[in-house]
Length: 203
Image (cartoon, rainbow, N blue to C red):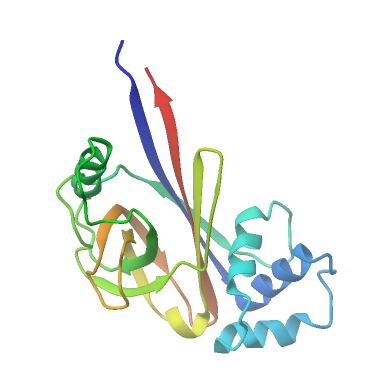
């Protein structure tokens, strides 16, 4: 009987106004949706002055309620390209490898070529950022990134990817996953990207 490990990457892109992000953040802390702090935090989110990005990203990932106002959720998933799968096989075999396997950057781009096993970068990366929050529970890794409206306003994205050992400039690091999307951001909207990598055993 053959034993296998299945690594499944899934993405959720949430586009919402800064005010709604502020409400969800406050609700996660036990406040009311109508808390007078909402406009203050929303303004900080818009300008990038609000520092609790990790808490916002986590709160949006875990939020399951209903709020006045609307937001959009786009979900996508794909497989893992060859580059890190090959390196993982070497590591398991006791060979010395360069990648640390620590995913640290999320990248977004604007080309729509279908993902391939041979991909090593996005087709046309336009923005990237360090993950706001990284956690793991049992067999699932959670990687969350929150972009303020000042960072992504007016932009459109057709691809996204997670990089291991990346740096702040484009196309750096090892591509762990790439996925096609279709997300357009208005001047007042934020973007939260919640990704999960699930390791399952299959026989």
